[in-house]
Image (cartoon, rainbow, N blue to C red; front, side):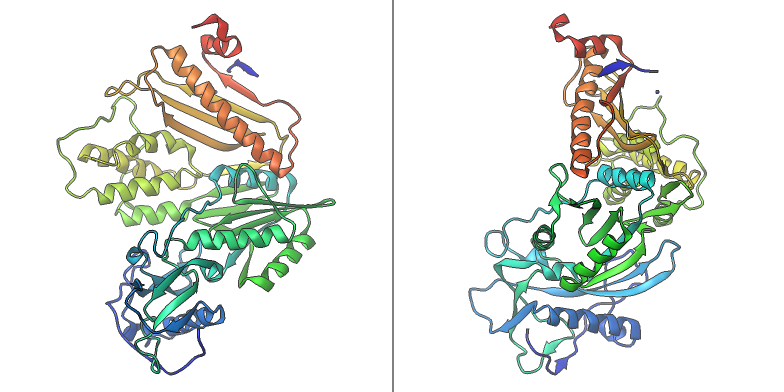
Length: 479
């Protein structure tokens, strides 16, 4: 309905080797020197734990090298895991294969692995707030080690853990390892097949959403690589499922959901507040903007960004890193989506002007750190708002579509997107926005159908262009 709007092997003796120099910043990727790490009890313990986990999982077996093998390298990567307050929660050492040594068609083929979509996460959070269901967070230890490899992959022995009896042997991998190109796909197939055997079904709209129904018991499971959100209407059923999964996988029950992929969840008496204060604070510190002057708006509408060959950045990497990080910040900040959409269009040849526009978004975020999305209970009515400007881009004259959807009073998706073709009138631009909104609405309805949510009424789409509404209602009126 369209209406007019109102807004291996057994353990043996081990030789120790060394690699590179350490870095204190947990955001960087260069690992510490193994000799230095061996002097720090926390790093030594985590390296041993990781190696022991690899042995328990029978990740590889040692074989003599041959001329036809493509032997890839590996390295230790060290990281400090922090909680939502910024303090260190644990030390983590991980053995990572150098997947860039792999050759397509020889030791890898298919690599794509889906992750849960952000609107799906927001829909589940909205349902949790509506029904007051418990939210649990799970983490799979060494998740990629559970995936079985279909190809023959050979790797050097881990630095610091070379078997003295077979110093020249190589590891023939039986299971996936972090860094392998096919590792995420192998893990996803392994975990998915196990969920299907215990009664879960996969969503038709989002392959990373799994639903379990048995009688009056309903469980939803969201999978993002090795991080899991579990929600259900029965605490006993949720606990039983965690126990069942722990039999097959090395599982960590992190308790109630509070910090997930940079999202901070705070519980109120009748609502959930989701924000990214720590993520944005870290982002400001990374770009030395934590003491910057605050901007009142994220983007100046009067100043249109354009491609230019003047004042090109000599190194576009910081710009691309910033814009990519800002894209993830839009998970709980719909107020910056249009601004981020504009700066994303110049990733290939950014200039100083584009970088200044991206930094302006950071200045705006500095003054609005406390903002987030509040999910409250309410009727599951699905509503969509669509809008479009006309030929707003002075360079290619294309329009920008904006779509916002609500489930009850809770926003679940917001999409700013540049249209693929030039619209010859504002009617055409608005009509294309309606068409894109209808497609997004159909996908949201499928997700809700997979979740077993019955909508009391047909979804409503709001548009502020009378002619576009008439065209959508009866296309005979226009050619």
